[in-house]
Length: 290
Image (cartoon, rainbow, N blue to C red; front, side, top):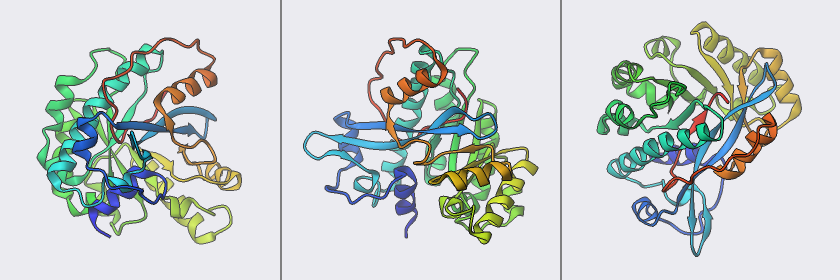
């Protein structure tokens, strides 16, 4: 599996057979790109705290298309274009959430190749919300990409910290990194790969891996996030292990932005406010607080 195929899987959050191959530049040009949010909960406080956003294309003939239709085979320049659009959209989305009464800590998936191509710190500094309540951004990178680009990740992490951007290590456990490698990159979240979360209540190996990842995150002063939670027994096991956040189909599936906003209001009993629709939606945002 190529790095780009890995990105396609990470952006999707759901396996799907693509009905049609769509170029991202075509989707951007026609404003077909959207962000769908999958809620994330705080396992200690038992409340909704945010979401991971996943890319979707709403095609006029094909309907909703999953990332398998547009990410595989994309070159580095196109990935960078997509990442830049996602950054700008994420910053706009924060303002929309804030106007609705929620100061969310959003995150976005960034391919390693885009770290070198994009002036991310400048983009954030020039386009970030000016509200004093803006908590910054989290950039998610897969474990294997961080290890392969450790020097670049270190350099970018230092530059981004000054403008309020932190790093999350995604798909932890799926790569082959050593703990010493992770020590060299400051990260805010460690996201445990769904393959280890599944059956962690009954599979002793998966349970041991989850517990190790959770303890490791805490030793680094970071949060542990369980991806792909599908059963109540696994959720309860993760709570006993001390995992901080969880997401998966048990909690809620990915949903369009407006539906997610309605869910936020339902969970917090806040009155619904009119939110201005952003010009265009885009991939990969995540959040940590509401």
